Image (cartoon, rainbow, N blue to C red; front, side, top):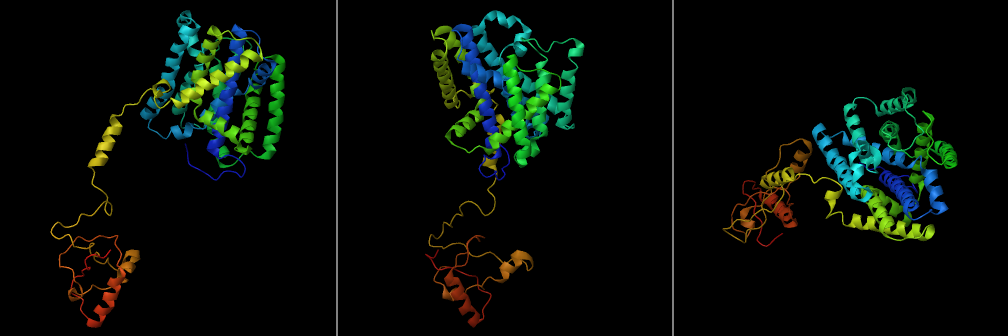
Length: 426
């Protein structure tokens, strides 16, 4: 995913806490949608599910967008064409496909409303991500922190323009609201990747997040106050990151990390499954209906992840393989690098031993020193091998019998006979 660094003792590495953040956020989204679908079709949901959903309403989607913004700088290293085509395959394609999947479930009449395609269905998240990546490309010369501040300022002036921030439903202004978290993640990437959230920041952030969650539960919706809402939610996301960086990687944490690595599958699959269950299965209200619906929805999501190697086209448009085939063909046709591969033996004499030592390098440097330490050539009359010259190989060291022959050679004083190795020696 990225370059590695030494993780903090007792805490996941930086890839792990990113996966944990995504996995926890997408699980909270599933809990929200399952209880909302149950309320719409089967009756009231358990109080615990309602409280969890209301308390985490301000933080779920901002956490997912913050985690996506952490990857912006890495994506911007690609050429612009490859960057845009990759985001279109990974974001626009599943947005369109799964919006079409929801039409027969929700009703074909929804397809006639343009705003329904923009943010009337849960796939709005993918469309927003694509828009943010395009803005990131256009503002790549501007620090992302300034873009985050600009989005806060733009959303703040909307009430002056007559936009009511307290209404629910189709709200295109949410694109401006959530942009602050995406570009804040891009701005804080370097700091969060290099070291965990300091304890002096973590503890006050947890207290602020708890207070903001209590306020959301009291008013039964996410607070939407200009400037203050985005700042409080950002503090809460930093608190969640600080906790994730320090959690021990027990089995439950690893399961959430796995869900985070496959968050796109969990996010896209869960709502159609929950809707079909609520519409066609006669489940009782309360816990007796909520728990089976949640377990079945998560089970189908896990199955979809396991089937992803065969169903990858459901989550990203298949890329053309022409470039990969051309690259493989060119690499196959390219000559092997020197010093690698098998050196063929001469066909004339199978008893020929390994190739002889190459000529010494010029004096000076590391290679020159190594050449000066080489023993002199062995005279031909000390060898039983036929005098068949073979190709030199740079990786074969002189065996012990070569050094013994070298000492005898010094006593004789000859230096002009090429070396030979007795047959059968390594």
